[in-house]
Length: 127
Picture 1 (cartoon, rainbow, N blue to C red):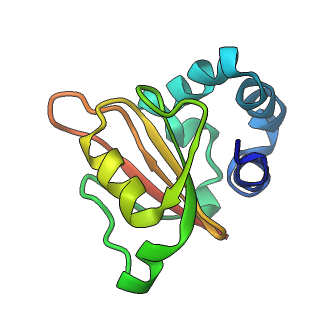
Picture 2: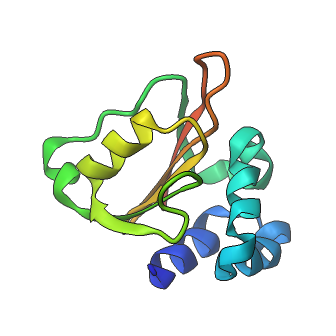
């Protein structure tokens, strides 16, 4: 599900030396937990730093008109296969998720690292 979103994410936001590995792990549902695990604590290691526009401990607030757009949500607990939903719905799910969460839109990606000690990192990446 959401192959075009995943392809967009890898092509635009993953460092060149990590692309093939990340692509391989995303393509296999058995391995998808592994790639999502990379976003638990060390997302910064595989992301293109030039595409990160925000790194924060707080949830990023999108404009109201952005919240209606369709996105792909992947999380390690309930939606490892991927869920196509509105950005608003995806953000609500991500806020309540303790493991890493990835939201991919048409021109952005939103990553929430795993919560530990009530603390997390959120990355917003744009093309």
